[in-house]
Amino acid sequence: MIRLGLIGFPLSHSLSPRLHTAAFKALGLDGEYKLYPVPPDDRDSLVGLSRRVRSGELLGLNITIPHKQTIIPMMDELTPTAQAIGAVNTIYAKDGKLIGHNTDAPGFLSDLYRSYPQTFVEKNALVMGAGGAARAVVYALLADGWKVTLAVRRTDVEQAGALIESMCPVAGDESLRSVLMEADTLSPLVAGIRLIVNATPLGMSPKVDDCPWPEDLSFPRVATIYDLVYNPRETLLLRRARAAGLCAASGIGMLVEQAALSFACWTEREAPREVMFGAVEA
Ligand code: NAP
Image 1 (tube, helix red, strand yellow):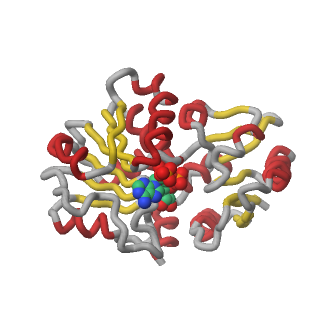
Image 2 (image 1 turned 30 degrees about the vertical axis):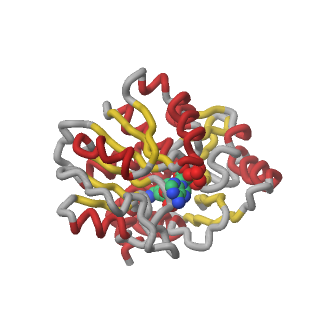
């Protein structure tokens, strides 16, 4: 039997078991995907679960908040993507070594181009937030040739600085900078922005009336909005963007895509994406 799972905390709303169970069923595989709720300070459980992957008892694990960075010292090796992002969301064993990988970055980029197959001619993006998900999004965009501006709240300026510094090898000198997430600061930049990504939890259930885009600021005339939040499927940000005539996508596609990439990495089988989409839409 294939044994997989997800470490995080809390995990009460996780859609991951549904996604992977649907994939097992579609491919006729005997598998299970369990949730392992591990509180932030429970290092022993992280070590114990990592050992179970190394021994082969578990084929692999996904990692989510708050362990994407704390799990890193328990890995023998990181893939170049996980190394560059500084976060791990997928672990597996290879030749007796525990490998940490990150499928959020390729999952985001792949869903962005699946949702908007037209080529983005001017690759100027604004990414709101500077946490774990923002790191993956920024890495993916820089590697794809985008110029990225981070928009962060005042308390996040230091974290944004650290993100920029750590991405230097991918970004070079000119491709990444940060500004405050305020109408006055964003206003002069708006006209040139072609992609806005919300990588903050603003708008996520139960606080569905929150929105990262300032109320008194117009959207760019031509831009695509991508909200990493997928619960609810249509956030206030997406509603406002669509009302302004813009293309807008929720993070559900990224959720499925990063899961599909993890699944393929563990099972060496192509994941049944359509079935997985169906499972989360049900
Ligand atoms: P995180 O590491 O906690 O980072 C959240 C970021 O948002 C931080 O920079 C934080 O700033 C900022 N932020 C929080 N509240 C804010 C506010 N009121 N105003 C302005 N900025 C605020 O979380 P994460 O892992 O990056 O996740 C962010 C969101 O992405 C979550 O909703 C998560 O569910 C979603 N996500 C979706 C996918 C997907 O597959 N679709 C994958 C990963 C994450 P501070 O540092 O100042 O708190």
